[in-house]
Amino acid sequence: MPLMKESVTLYHGSNVKVEVPEILVRGFNKDFGYGFYCTNLEKQAQKWALTKRFEHVVSVYQYTIDEKMNVLSFPEMTDEWLDFVVACRRGVKHDYDIVEGPMADDQIWDYVEDFMDGSITREAFWVLVKFKYPTHQIVFCTNRALKTLKYERSYSL
Image 1 (tube, rainbow, N blue to C red):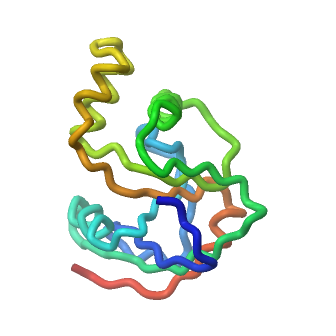
Image 2 (image 1 turned 180 degrees about the vertical axis):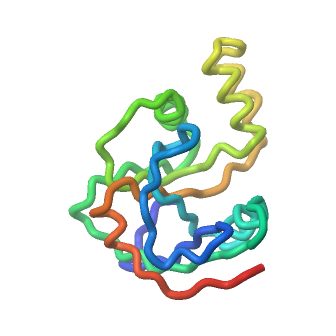
């Protein structure tokens, strides 16, 4: 679901309070590449936080939409979404400031991996994910994009 308002509340789940978001380039390649990942679904951010060791913290931000940003938005899972996720997971870089769309949860990610390694066809992928309900993610891929986020508060679970 694309963000259409001027300002939107976003959430980030972690094991620490994140007052100053950063783009950390480490670990495995992610759905939409490296960046600072948020969601507009508070419960999803809480789930992200609960997967972390030690502390479980949700940070809350106001995102002010800047029409000058280079934004790629996927309202739903499509062939274009799948191709973009596969490319990002393979380490292909892109030039977007912000990318938004469905998130491949663990089960959907298993199917993405099967598609990537040729174990299943594109058609089989769509049959398998037909009744899966992806969640939402928005990734801030550039420092310029991070400036559109204003930290509001954090809370522990």
